[in-house]
Image 1 (cartoon, rainbow, N blue to C red):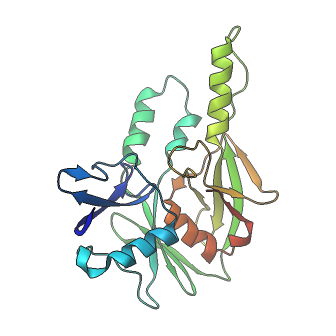
Image 2: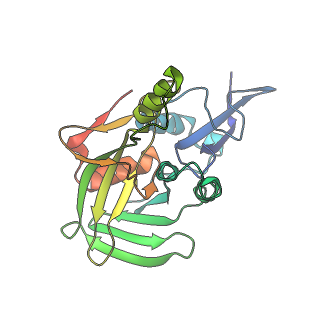
Image 3: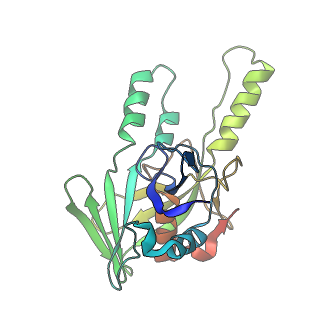
Length: 240
C-alpha cells in the first residue's frame, strides 16, 4: 500500500524533464522509485498519468495543476545530445561540453491559442513570435549514417554500426517563423520502459535529415503540445 500523502513529484532523466515527470510513492521503507531518476519502474501515457494525479487529489500535497483557460503552455527546448554524432572521434572535449550543456534549457516556446512566442530561457528575453497563420512546421526524420571503413571491419564493428544507425532514428520537426532562423526540434522517447523503439514516428513521406540532427530536443509532453499546435497530429504515429 502506498500513501498519497507521501507522494512527491520529480523528473524522469537527468536533464530537466528530458523524458517526462515522475511520481514517487512511498510505503515506509519501501519505495516505488528512488531519485535521481534515470530509469523508472513503471510507465504511463500522459493521459493516464493525468488521471492518476487527479485520483490522488489534494490529499497528496502535490503542487500540480493544468494551465488555466487562456494561459499559454511553456515548452522547454534543450540542446540536442544527438549533435555529438556530427563530431569526429577526436573531439572528445567538445562532445563533453555539448552533453554537459544539454542539462539547462536554452529556449522556451510559449504556446497560446493564437500563436507562439520564443524566449531565451535563462534571461526570459523575447526572441520572436508568430501567429499560427505566419508559421510553418514540417515533419522530418533524423538518422545517423557513417560511410566507409578504415581497414577491414570485424563482425562486431559491423553490428555496432548497424545498431547505432537503427537507434539514432528520431522524429523531428522544422519550424519556421518570420524574422528567425528555422528551429529544428527532436523528441527521443521510447515506447515503454524496456523497448528499443521510438515512441513517436511520422506517417507518410517526410524530410530525411541524414547526419544533420536537430539543434534542440523536447520532452514527450512538450512534443505533443507542439505537434497539436502546429497541425501535425494527423501525421503522428504513437507506439506503445
